[in-house]
Length: 320
Image (cartoon, rainbow, N blue to C red; front, side):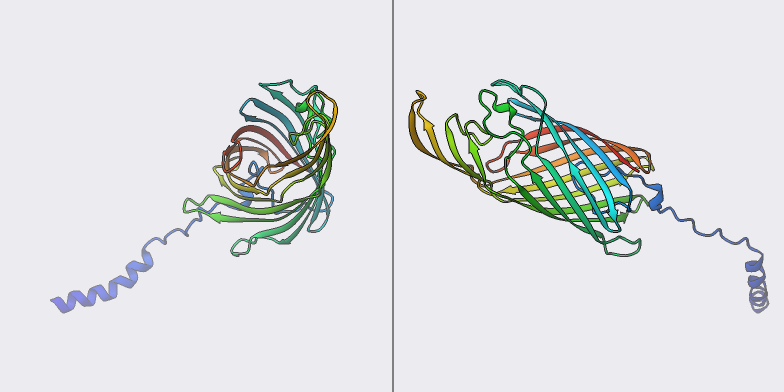
């Protein structure tokens, strides 16, 4: 009896297997890159370059809030794809300072103007570990007022120096267990400033009658940014930053004594090195792959020889 039953099972299993319904093919829940739209995080520059002939227009409006001071400003990125892998652009800045312990700016003024070029070295391909990478050069021109400020030191919106910034920008994409995309940027840059002449009241703390020079220290900046694609249109973003600035030295003489009589006195001011950490949480909403808005806040924690600040900001990102 047992042998007969086993024989029946051997003959029946193949037939049952053939008559059983086939399982549906596995459906991928992994988000496609075309289903994720981005404006970019608040601080980290993109490692991508624009296609030749295309423009990017991204104005920021912000308020740098620190003790006794509100610095209202705008910073606008205007970039153009000059050729394959190469984008160029300008970044004009305007501002207005409101002081709690002195006169405000006498009006909205222009800050220093930055020109830049970025060359893309590699481009991310899905399935590869290699990120998008680019080298970036920026030159900041001393177009903003910085000295001879008289009774309105709040009119100082510039640094007075030519500053060269070299950066390495990177960007990659990670797929989380949820299937959603996490875009990651890591950028590091260093800035080198030329000396500049300083006269009278300036942003460097000099007073009326001062004649001399300033030599800003080198500046190092690193930024790790992540963006989580909640939906096609909504994105959560976060920057984590570190900055280190070398000693800024002001040296010269003051040709006036407190009674405004000619009496030269040697003056030397050293800021000392400083460092600070910061974060910038933000939320992005995208109407289309080429148009989006960002709303965020940068928080700088007072580190060594630095002052903390809170900076709410809004930006529009448009590519065409």
